[in-house]
Structures are given as C-alpha cells and as structure tokens.
Image (cartoon, rainbow, N blue to C red):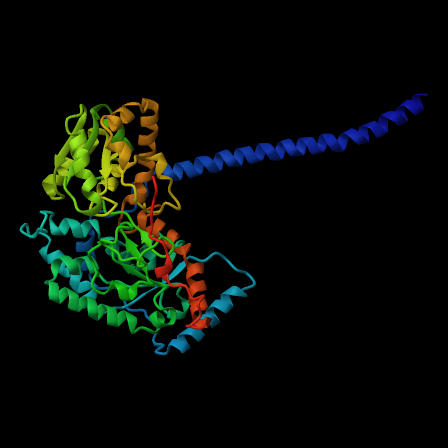
Length: 501
C-alpha cells in the first residue's frame, strides 16, 4: 500500500512541478517587464522633462540675430564638398539614383538610415548676400511695414529657412540631429533636395522690381537642375514661410514641399491646388518672447492674476476680422486684458510681461488662420485659447495640442459672456495640468543653433521623412503613366484644406 501510495504521489509531483515552474517563470517575466517598463517610462519622462540646453558642455543660440552674427563672422564659410562629377542629364541622374536605391533595397543587413538631404550650392546672391543684407540693416529703426510692424521682427518670426539651412550645412561633428537627418554630397544618395533661398528677407529688404527679378532668377536656377526635372520638383524643399514671399513665381514650383506658417483656405494667400497637408509642412513661427521654463512657471504661478490676455494688432484682414469682433465682446469683461501692440522691442517686453501674468492667452486668427502669438503663449506658459476655425498646426502628426491648448469655435466665442464663463469653469487642477504640459512641450517650438533634439528642426525632418515614400511613388508613377491618361491626377483636383469646428 505504501508502495502504491508512493507511486501515486510521484506522478502527482511531476504533474505539478512543470505548472509551478511555468507559473514562477511567468511571474518573473512579468516582474521584469514591469521593472523595465517603469524604468523605460521614467527615462522617457526624464528625457522629455530636461531641456538639452541644460547640458553645461553645450551652448545654444536661440536668437536669430545672435546666431546669424556668429554664422556670418565665422573664420571661414562651410567647405564645398559636392561631388566632383556633375550629372547634367536627367536620365543619367535617374539611372544613378535607381542603382543606389536598388543597392539599399537588397542590402542583406539593412539598418535604419537618417533622412538624406542634398543642399544646393546656390549663388551667394540667393543666400549669404541676403543674410548680410539683413545683418547690416536690422538695426534701422525706420524700417516698418505699412501696418507699423518692424520689418526685422517679421523676418525673424519667419526665419525657419535660416535655422534649417544653418544646421544642415554645419560640420557633422557639431550637429546633434545626425540620427534624424544628414547632408549628402552626391545627388544619387539624396532622398530630398533643399533649396536655400531666403525668400522672406528678399521680399522685405529688396526694392520691389529687384525682388521680383531675383525671384525669377532663383526659379530658373532651380528648375534648370536635373534633379528638379527628374521629379518635377516633388522631392525638393522650398521655404516660403511668409505668405507674401516668392508669391510672383511660386506657382511654377507648386509640386515642391513648401515650408509654411499655415494653410489658408480662403484663396487670399495661396491659390487652390498650391498647398495641402499631404505635400507641404507647417512650421511654427519663431517666438518673439523669451522662454518661461519650469522654474519661471513655478515662480510666476502666484502672479498670474489676469484671466485672459491678448496683445497685438486688433484689426486684421481676411480671416483675422474675428479679432475686432472679439475685442467688442471681451473688452469690458472682468479679468480680461486686451491691448493694441506690434512686435517691436517695447511690444516684446509688454507681451512677455502680460503673458507671464495671465492664465489664458487669446489666440485668434490673423490675416491667415495662424498667428505668432500662439507660439509666444506656449513658451510663456500661458494656456492658448485658439479661436481660428481653419487652423492647421505644426507637427500635429506628432504632438497632441489638446494637452496644451483650448479650441473654441468662432460661433461660441462671440456669444455674449460664453467665453469668459467657459474659462472660469476650468478647474485649478486642470489649469495646472495644462501648465505642466506647456513646460514639457515648449522645447518643440524653440529654434536654435545647434538644432536640438525634440526642437522644431528635429520634428520638421521627422514629419518630412514620413512623406518620402509617397513622394517616390508619385515620381515613379509620373515617369511611367502616359501623359494623356485620364488617371493622371493633378493637385488641382484636391479639395481645399478645411478644419471644421
């Protein structure tokens, strides 16, 4: 009997042991997963909560004027490392690109590659000469636009062409974004081609006819390039961040990737078929105020006694007419400060002070759906209240703006008393959550040299990289589809961009 009993106990042990071991192994793996997940999350949170500029070994210039001064007065300009062999034939270039792409496709040990960008070496009249022109004239206090805005501040607000180009042509040893984008020196290696023409500087600082002539020259120079003719410009990047810049000739370059402040669907600034989200990229304005970091936010918390603040031009054209209506509705409300102002030095100080004393900052449409004040509010820790029904936002494929801003329809905002009641209904914990997110998100809107991880230059290239496969699809399709084919879609058939409330 004991033998029989022992026999029964032994199989029972062998049945339970694998289950027990499996359970213990599963628990161990789960524990390891939790530990690594927490560690990874903590690392990611730490990376997102510490600005790269806090690294004492690095110095970042976020001022366009300061950075440009250093850039232009460097001991020597960047060396020209372009390929000695220039491919003058579209077919030769196409063959060379196909060979390089095939080699990468069948690479037995593929590895993720950064975006490869070929930077055109354009004549200095399109690049350095214009930068020197700005540098030598920006102190001219009499240089204003017709509506009173200082010209040099408008150029700074739209200087995205400088920040991207300066980073691309910097020595690789000085760049931080090498894992995101690299400059290549032969065209057959390139995913994209960058056109370094300063369209905003030329528009504001050159005499009108001279500017138009320079635009025509730039157009001819670029469209004469074999790479442009191979792709009809689809893989070319054109900075036209001010809506007035390059206006007289840009219709001839409508296939290129345009770098824009927003997308206007009214037809006042861009013609139908010229801009759309699948092709182009929205980039933030350069901020006109200084960053209010986590420490600043903490110190300014008790000083934020204004409920809602706005300082800027109160009367605008086109979609910006909402401003005048909002002024009428809000000007007598308690806790609201609305001031007329421009972007000069005095205006900068007043705007910065007002935003740092306010919980919410009004961000209505300007002449176009966007406004520079949105980004001023973000870096000031002032929760944006966006009243712009057709606004498109930078990097929205990466960033969730609902965590840092309130979106209000024009219809609601103009109802008597509605907006103030809505803002007062937002609880203090919710306000603090917005402000905490603003402290984290602000880095995404701070241009600098060298360009930082998580900065707007970084996110710009990440967004553009997402377009590359589709660009190549359309290039190859256009090369093989019969031109008379009814299936050959052009961008004119696209609907205008609309963001419905």
